[in-house]
Image (cartoon, rainbow, N blue to C red; front, side, top):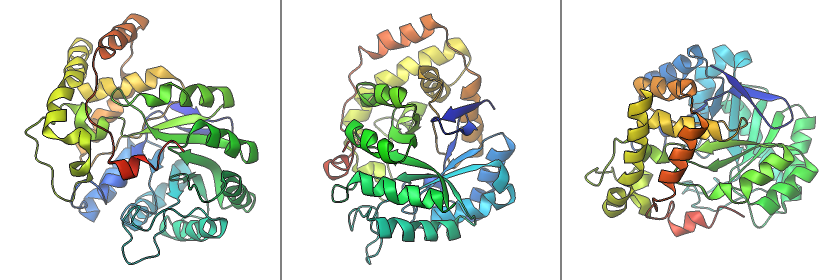
Length: 332
């Protein structure tokens, strides 16, 4: 597995990481623990060094899983986690109690994450969503203190807008921005990616396979479980999925020529955009892990990329990517 650098602070990770959220949360029932541990450890054996989690996934259970799985390999891997939701109430679902990035809360959250992750330092600590009630300078300052204390190595933001990125970076250099980015969500290209390039910040695309849609395994007849959060997303209505198959058809056409799969083409397209982009596809299946990692071997010529661009520009993706209350938490 090739490696890539995120930001100018020397954070080096595998070209493809592993998003661990879906093993515990969000896409239906959690995985059986033994299977999840095995999947994460197999990823390490295959050369993955970059693992993504958050305190809110579960809540807490995903960090515990990742910590247990990676404990034997701690010196070989980079663990990223996130703070920023208020999980103090009885209803601790993400967003139920709102956001909380007050400096004292950040420090408490980090202590909890360190214990669950079975480590004495967090490699990359993201603010999960920008808190409009706390100046980003205060957030960056709190993380800077944690870095000085040796509890955190690198600072990241998630789904932040360009003004917030600049203000945070002026206080504590930002190593990486995590945001949704894929062939079916390209909004970061307008302002965010040029800003990251200017400042020397890496981009970590989550949902690089369109929450599973770009694999080609879903269509308008797909029935989503009630506890699968995609069932609340406008882009996953039967009508939207039917319309959006045009994008999957494009990926399948390119995949057939390259001897690859649609998922591999979608991931390889991201890798081809910038050398400092590191996608973190998630999966609960070993064969999907192998497939995703194979994307790092797919190479595009400039004419391949131009052809994909020309075809994709003619496709209008249907449906919002989030329900309105969650979309309001992004781009601040």
